[in-house]
Image (cartoon, rainbow, N blue to C red; front, side, top):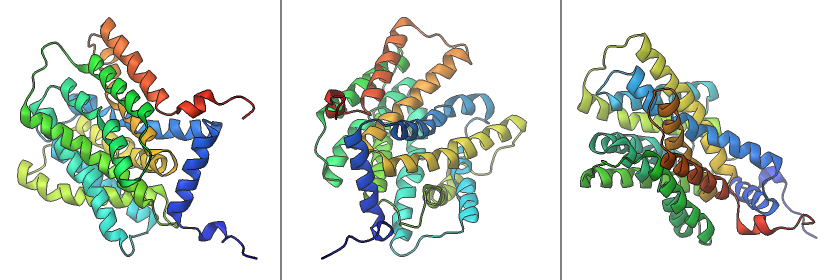
Length: 320
């Protein structure tokens, strides 16, 4: 007679997949809803970046902002956790850090320079669709027409919220925007695929990736922008917000969610970033919010919620 190995001896990746499968079968339990809400705080925090950048930070130094958003927080987490990668996790952490931070941030800022903010946000909103496609190829997940359809609806909703009638298009900017969305989408998929070592928590994983991404950004920032700008009180406040709430706190919550939730559903939460940015613009910065934008906002929120479900969960009888 054979016995199953103790729970703690199972590979971490197998445990993560088992938790995801149980969560999917059980539907949205209280614990799952709480986990989704905590994970959603990450893209919501990232949605404050535009307002913080325009209102508090010195202009023309986007890479310096990205550097302060990643490297100091990553080094702080390494100091607190006192855990360095081992074995193949040295190169895995470097790859994930480069995709999620080191490559994504420069592409994001290049997109913002070449395209209006609405066009850039709409390109970023296609990320759930890219994630769904990569999940089929890399994770061998069955394609979900439900989530792809809601991903398209979410991108349309974001477009209605943030696109203006005079939005101009730039070929290089569009390529950069799609490449940025693809970079973070691939980073999400590989984070899910590789999971994390059993003794490593999401805070440690966030520290590895923020440090790796910051080290990619450091020479790029010095080469492109040169010396750091003069910092006043407002700038210090803005950088502290981006580095803490928008940096290591948001990334720790994000990587925790990716590990325990279906990755295609988690990707739908990215829609919160442009929606939060639009809300801040309307209520804090005095920007107009039209009826069409309200309709787009409602569509994007509906897509975001529906993306957390599946047809099986919606048709499950109460006795099940």
